[in-house]
Length: 573
Image (cartoon, rainbow, N blue to C red; front, side, top):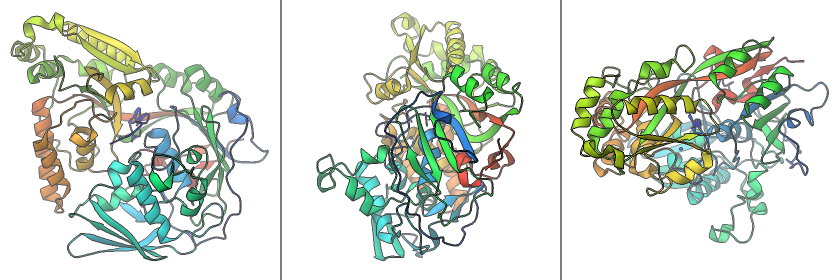
């Protein structure tokens, strides 16, 4: 659920996100204490396989664990799309960095470290990036990774146009491999965010993908680009590789002992991401020591119960995710700015925060306060019934609200969202709005949001930033290019706003760029484009025998990187 959701995040990421996020995945999206590189090891000769038989979610976590192995098991919101050109929600964003390497890797300081690229050069005009690749890196089947694999991975992502394509491919003119160890990107205009965007360019093995592509499909000579095969297999060089993947239940990944990087001495030998958030199942697995870490989508009461289980604690981790009520700016009655302002003033933010984990804070900007470039001095909406009624009086629907009920779609996989929907319904009744709240499965909501005619008045979604600066999150959430995706139900489609966002993202001077972000943030608040509720604390029940670098602030807060498994220590018995 996305970056980014619910994210992706939900919230996933996420893409989430993340969120949210984020977050579960959109079919065609717009939405870690990392160890330093180590010496290259010998290639692995073990190819990933797919389980022929499936098991129930309850049986799944223990079905193939060998004695003496270190195991990490966690639950996530379904479904999992593990193709690096397709997935971008929370569970996908947590899985992909473990299966695939990228040119650069996000660090805890909000910057990037060398990864597959050991170094890079940037031309004086900021338009050419030359990456020098680590030598001797092997894919999981033992094939040597080459620069041409990077070029192929980029072209595949761009052609398919899903996953993180919206983040990586815009503005890129060309990608070339002048030799096996060099990759050259040429971009259309300078961008401060181009380099960090490459954390989401996951490198696949060209030969293996071509071998497993069908002869017919949507991509011309590339057939289906192996999108079917890569749903249950991997073609990566990362620290883990797929060994079982019954789609509706879990993905099992085993350690790639010949990975070029460095593992925590107690890193798990097997990692199982279980795709369920069903409360009874999650609690049972945790109580029976069949789960090391829960998903983040459990109810407040569930986390309180987890904390009472011997050997279990609850972590509340900082994120770059926020919880939004996405107000449809293109359909009555929320197409009127005064109706939207009335909604924003009528909402009881303090009551909403009381439904969340202690320490959760109200959003003070249109994007998470943890992002660089957020202006903390801008005014933001607070509960004020006098102002709410004043704004409603100026709305052109004020005298006929009964004709324009507001529909709120909340995500059925995240039960706590119903509490916020009921609070919203009560708050809006105080100023005369009729609110219908609809329990909606995530994928149904994604489909509803893909078309203006079917999109609800409000969708409730966690969205997670893809990069640690405000600018890209502003683009994710409010640029015309993301309408019709789970990342934007506002349907703004404003060329002037698009131009402002694009201009800010192409400004290399940080002070000037942040000033432009501030102006955009103020514009969005003046429009009351959304109902901005809270910046998310990501909560997980976790066993005491797990050493999670995220709990010590040693990881990137970007969606998915809390689950970079080479850095996680497991001493559970």
